[in-house]
Image (cartoon, rainbow, N blue to C red; front, side, top):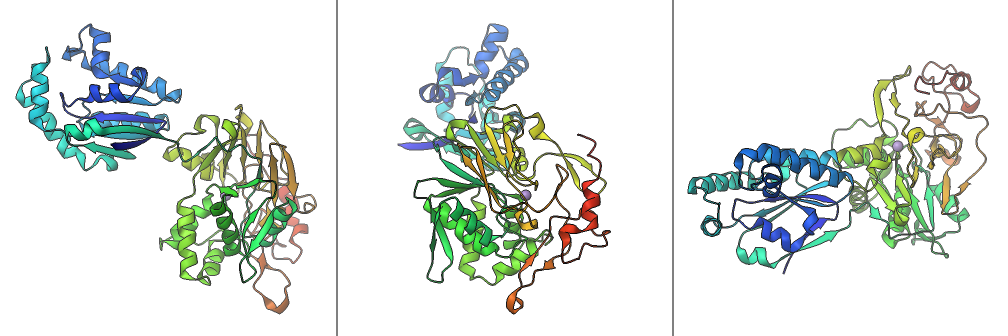
Length: 482
Ligand SMILES: [Mn+2]
């Protein structure tokens, strides 16, 4: 038995010369409606499956049907030779267009066997040269399939291997529909370990500490589980402490966590890539440098394993760092991950030189609740079944959680007076304001205020929330897209 694992929502591209047994293989392992063959499409457009002059029309039809199935979220198998790179390129583009994973299953069988099978079939009087050419194309393309974009590649080389192969459909990493909650979904923590501990305690979680008294996990006596919207790290005073606690909870099965843009950048830095250490990354790296090598390796593995979004509770709840449009729920592609991490930008910049973000939540009409963070807001406010939970904890705001399915929010403390952020805008960071702390500990906090820094005269004041720059920023006219 040879189990071939494929994601349950994928575009499966069979690759093999004529006579290699693709149709027989597919018939035994997929539903008849899941398999679209070029022969069948040729028959549909020309009343003759072997009419090679109908090939262009047949493939147009094949792509059309496949596209409609993928749009509907249905696994689709392409039964055609697909030995030419151009043919595969079009199918990979089709998979990407519908944000599903492309899979290749290659039947790389001996040429002699394929020739014998063709000889047995009527109307398959291909010359030996056709078979030889197809086989040459197949062999040349074989090693580059992953580079072409196939996320999964299975190669079967003997009739015995083909016979023994079974298909196992695997859930997508994002698919947690079987997890029904209840959940406590927690906004951007950004290294604020003390606030996180306090919030978890407020929510009823019991913290577990290691010998050094550091919280390494937490569980809820009522079996509630936490879901973190990402951006655990950077800017705040104790990124390692937050990671230690959240990694422990995820490992213990008492929390889930999706990736934030700050985790992704931190991972690059940890791997020695040359990234600009801005937006609080320098703080994280300094803090992590004081941790043992083994801990940094753990962090690297943890971040590397973070998924862009989760679909939970039978599809009724979606969590992604920057939110997610309905069309991308439960889908997998580069652009879906980009959206989860960074949101959708319009490509324009505003008067502060910051990217203008596309107001996806204003246009959201989906049935699933979408919970996210990424853009600090003064208070969580429902907008078309979506809720942003980033209330700017690290900027002097609060750390917020939403109880699901109850839909009650829990925030740590009172919000700072009259803080309003322009929607769709990240606060520009003023320089760190050292908080008065005993023994000169290097505890630094940043402020939410002052979008006009560095032109603001008060940006470095010790009471930044009253800064004049902040006040004038709140009077800034709404962005053009509102
Ligand atoms: Mn973010």
